[in-house]
Image (cartoon, rainbow, N blue to C red; front, side, top):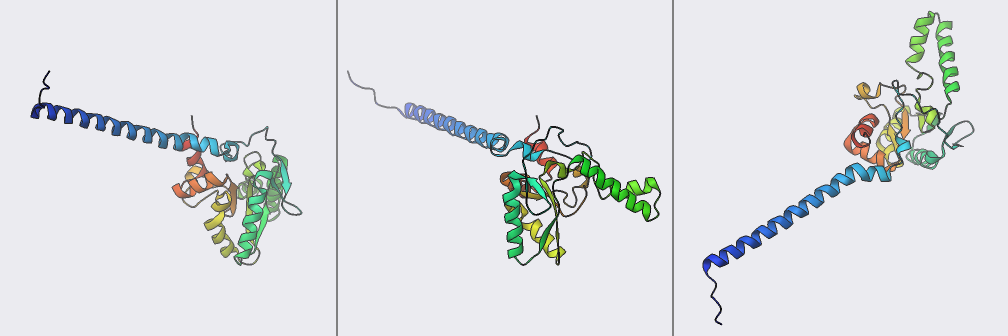
Amino acid sequence: MARHAATPESEKEKRRKWILLITLLLSFAVMVTSLFFLAKIRGWRVRRNDKTLLTIVNAETLAPADSAQTLTFIDDTHMVDARCAYELEQMLADCRAAGHDPCVLAAYRSESEQRELLNAMTEDYMADGSPLEEARRRAAEEVEQPGHSEHQLGLAVDIGGNTDETGTQRWLEEHAWEYGFILRYPAGGEGLTGGGCGENHFRYVGLDAAKQIRELGITLEEYVSMFYSN
């Protein structure tokens, strides 16, 4: 039987079908790629970041009552959560190698120790002549209320400089993320973080989260809300 010769119309229809098939395949590839990146944004962070390292503690939110972290000494007097001890020690060592002189001013504090500190500062202001209510207000501007301090988590440290406070602070603000730490209360974020107490207060959130928070230029509250809220 003789085969029918292809007509221009049949060739055009064949090309149209091929174009449609290629378009569908490309659309499918775009959809798969989009789903991959969406999963990376929402799920990859959950898998790679230890969510307990992202616990929010601020003026509105209490520290978990059942916190059972493993603490370890980083010097003669200060303890931190063991999960951040190595990175903290490495960060301090590298800061010193860069010509600065960082020192840990505060690390883990229990709720009772936080209460003692707040009461002691209140008494100091009263000794200077401030009435009780004013003394309490002034003390609260420098010390978080018991149960509302990140120091209770063992993941926060206040770091000063013995001889070059400004240089130490600048170095830490620039490099802390490389060790999993963030400047917890960045300028301009007071409305979200509540301001906190201490411009030299650094919080460990893990290497991945610290990098992402820095790249996005957001606070810990925003980060948790964006990627870990239900």
